[in-house]
Length: 115
Image (cartoon, rainbow, N blue to C red; front, side, top):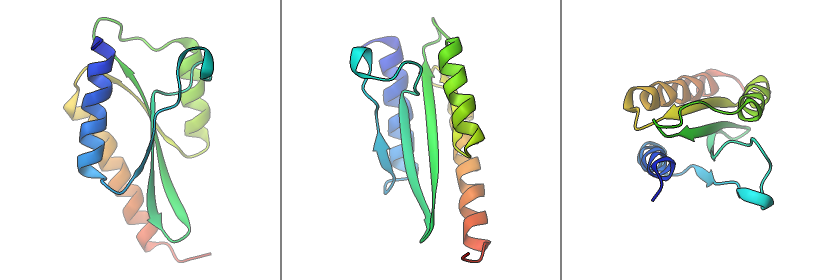
C-alpha cells in the first residue's frame, strides 16, 4: 500500500467509527476521475431536510502539499458549505477537529426549525 493509501485507510477507519451511518464515496481517480476532486467524501444526515457533506484530500507526509487544482476544488466545495480539509499523514488531532466541526453542525441542525 502506498503512503497516501495508508492515510486514506486511517481517515476512513476513523470516519466509519465516528459516523457509521454516513454514506461514503471514493471518487474514481486516474483517467476516469475529475482532476483535483477530493479523495474521499462523506454524507452525514443531520435531520429530515439537511445533510452535512465532508470532503477530505489525503496526503502522505512525504508529499504533503495539495496541488493547485486540489486546493481550488476544496475551496469551491467549502463555499458551498462542505467541510473541506487536507489531512497529512495520520494526524489524529486534525481528524478530531473535523469531527468536532461535524458535531457542531449536527447540533445546529437539531436546533434549527424546519423551513
